[in-house]
Image 1 (cartoon, rainbow, N blue to C red):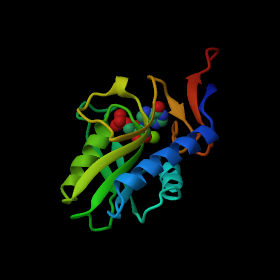
Image 2 (image 1 turned 45 degrees about the horizontal axis):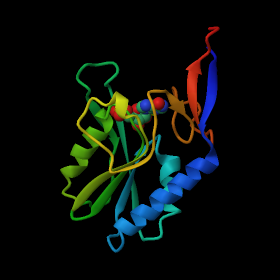
Image 3 (image 1 turned 90 degrees about the horizontal axis):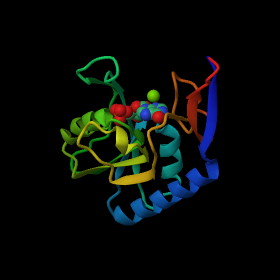
Image 4 (image 1 turned 180 degrees about the horizontal axis):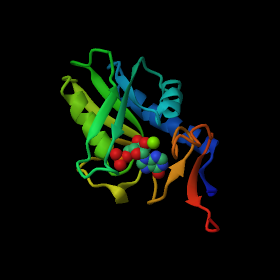
Length: 176
Ligand code: IMP
Ligand code: MG
């Protein structure tokens, strides 16, 4: 099977937007030393770039979840890795690669809320609001996109394409 890739966001456009997000976060979380929690695997490049752009002290941790929303009607989410930092009383910011149906982010938010953070917000690099099934929105959004499947900058199709420096729309080749 072959795919056609169309560039949606070039590396410099991503870097510029990440810098803007970092500036906003640095202002809004000044003196709070927030805990930034990257959602693995997709958000690891975003997390790495963002923490090098913020101008305030931050603590970094990760969470990894697997959603069965596609294969089961339950929309069950399994946690494969959880933050080891004590989150109680902390200002926690979840870093997502992409907010699609919202099932994963909803489950992560509920899971982290149970650990009594002082505040809990979501920052997503990409937002696909047209696909949302859950009552959830991101507090910080890098780019809003239409309903397309994207890869690169951490995002994959069956573990492929994560290492692409830009974000591309992936289309199955019409000839296949
Ligand atoms: P949700 O639970 O439906 O919001 O899906 C969130 C997760 O699905 C993301 O963290 C991604 O791992 C994956 N995902 C959703 N849309 C895309 C896409 O367009 N490209 C790659 N991964 C995606
Ligand atoms: Mg994925």
